[in-house]
Amino acid sequence: MRHRMKGRKLGRNSSHRKALFKNMATALILTARPDEDDPAAPKVAGRIVTTVAKAKELRPKVEKLITMARKARVHEQQAEEFATRAERGTDAWKNWREGDQWQKWVNAKSPAIAMRRRAFSVLRSKEAVDILFDELAERFETRDGGYTRVVRLPTRRLGDGGQKAIIEFTGERDRPKASRAKAPVVKKEAAVAEPAPAESTEEKSEA
Image (cartoon, rainbow, N blue to C red; front, side, top):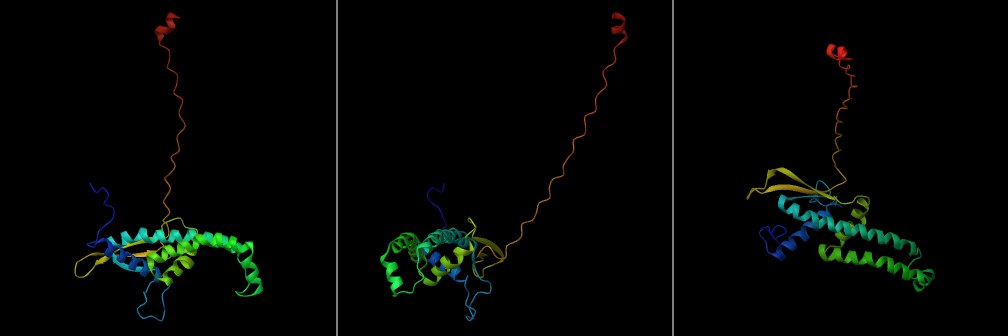
């Protein structure tokens, strides 16, 4: 039995495996905002190619980061109620900074900042954190889970013959749900009244 043996080792020790998933998560998030001038930019945004085992292990880690970004977005929206439009350093900004609105803004904004720091400790990329909290959080604002999908590829990797797959963000290139045909309705036929049994001649004579 595999008690307390969750996850795949992938032929790596703990630190190597942790660094592997950090790099893969960062690469996947960065592809959501491809650089058109970069010749090495991915052909399809929000997608990377890897093996099936790595994709299955990476998927829950990326989805937890997106869930964290969605929660931070709620706090950021609440903090906007107490924010000021005045430019930094002006008298209006200084009055806001010294008033109660600033303290309310800090209390509402601090959970979002803490979540950004937690995400940065995983991704180690400011650009990836910005994409995660600014673009992906807004993209999946109304979606509860299922932010990524794993699709197997028919070709195998050269060298070791590993089964290749793509992991990508959902919301684009989604297949329309096929409508299932409704089962035919069977109408029950009206029950035919059976004729009453005829009285025998013996019963008539006795009567």
